[in-house]
Amino acid sequence: MKISLFPKNTFSLIFLIIFFCTTFNSLAQKASPSEGKKEVLEKKYIKEINSLSKHKKVQKAFKTIEELESRTLNELIMLTEIPAPPFKEEVRAAKYAEMLKEAGADSVWTDDVGNVIALKKGFSGNKVVALDAHLDTVFPEGTDVTVKKHGDTLIAPGIGDDTRGLMVVLTVLRALEINNIETEADILFIGSVGEEGLGDLRGVKHLFRKDGPGIDSWIGVDGGDLAGIANGALGSLRYRVTFKGPGGHSWGAFGLANPHHALGRAINNFIINADSLSRSEEKVSYNIGRIGGGTSVNAIPFESWLEVDMRSAVPDQLKKMDQIFQKSVQEALKKENQVKREGSDLQVEIDMVGDRPSGIIPVDNRLVQNAMASAALFGATPTLRTGSTNSNIPISLGIPAVTIGRGGKGDGAHSLQEWWINDEGHLSIQRALILLLSEAGIAN
Image 1 (cartoon, one colour):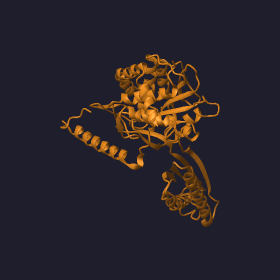
Image 2 (tube, helix red, strand yellow):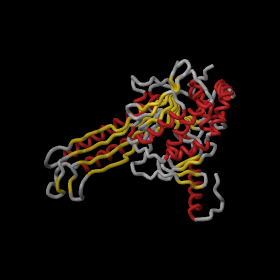
Image 3 (cartoon, helix red, strand yellow):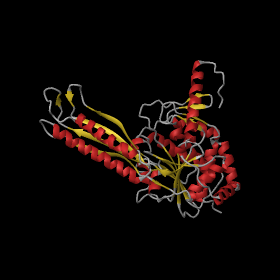
Image 4 (cartoon, helix red, strand yellow):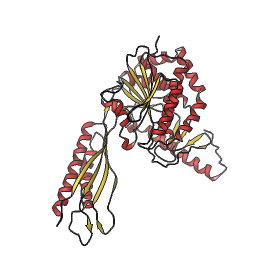
């Protein structure tokens, strides 16, 4: 990090203060027991990863990754500046497909939902291993995604989450091709769509459909440093609820059923009962994130809506919270219709807008152990955690899956001031490569 301790201007001073504050907060969060716990790493996996790291071609690939650093960084900036709003990833996807082809993949295609997939054929093709990062960002169309540089700090929406992940995937492919490393398994290098928000993991859900490519193990690249490994899937349910009625004048039509009043009752019913469940031993959360409707202060609205998010890593807890929510909405509808004095009843529409399943891959699973051992190889203390990522889908299906970090240093994800520093960022790429090879196997 090349920031002077004595900034020459006000902007530098402000940035320095923000940087140290966010870095301190980040470190504090990583030290929190709630973020994860240390798990037992078996010696045989440490030995396996260490042995693999000494393979001549792996050593050459590690060196290649370091030699590619300048190119990787320049292309990170270029790719970040190609907008990829929710449900509008096509332009970035087209460029990423072009980059994967240039890197030497055997074939590259875009599937029906927009995922970009590159195949590197294995010697035996005995299984299929995927290395993935997501194309989409949370930022709407029209967001300024120009990368700003301050010293060696890069600032731009989406630069870390998950554009850096895309560059990890791409650079691993390049290192394998440049050094002619053949694997036993087929490998899919993927830039997926729909990971963020209301995208609802649509890209990875499509990949794991019944007639999909038959992926046997999954490595996602998303999130932060070398230490964090998501082997648990944080499940979530999201609904958009809309109460509808005839609407009318606040004085002249007084007595009609009021959608806003019903919405208020539903929220009140829900939070009272949800609070009790959320205080139980197994964590479950709830949040009314958005509400809206109505046309004027002196008009009974014809519709009122809310969006709710409920989360838990424990399926039964999430199911209980869902039941509380559904009951709260129906009771609010019934009560508002009972108190109306004239006109037709309110109706309610409950639309699911998000369904991310939960689950966990056990710590003694080979992929989880190698993810931990590969982190330790580069000096990190591996920490397992639960997260909401593309890995949710394979994890929920019992397919070995982990999400590993993109490396470097960064913060401010999902904000306009997201930043990333290439502080030994090559280590995360080398780690991704050796973890991938531990799953795919090097062909003799």
